[in-house]
Length: 116
Image 1 (cartoon, rainbow, N blue to C red):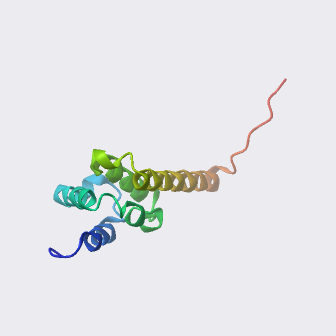
Image 2: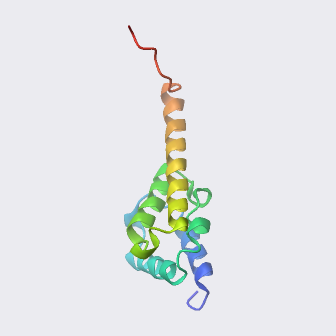
Image 3: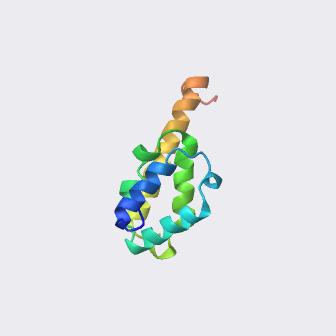
């Protein structure tokens, strides 16, 4: 693992931590390593390894992925297309899964007609 290319190390990080429910459950040295690898690859693998399909065990794991992106992505990469695409996909998936869970408990969300 020590001498693996960055994309293999990022894949291993995702596989190891994709079911975590909190950022606090991930060791800080793993997060710093993720940040360093993301910097080295100029964010080329953000879309691939931070995809909602890889983190979709629960809404909490998707939120953990968003927290990693927001907190540990180097500032120079935050204006890039890969970062924007990854964060947008995760947020859309969180909203969709949250809405689906709400509707399962409370019924469909629909607008009620206004009284005149």
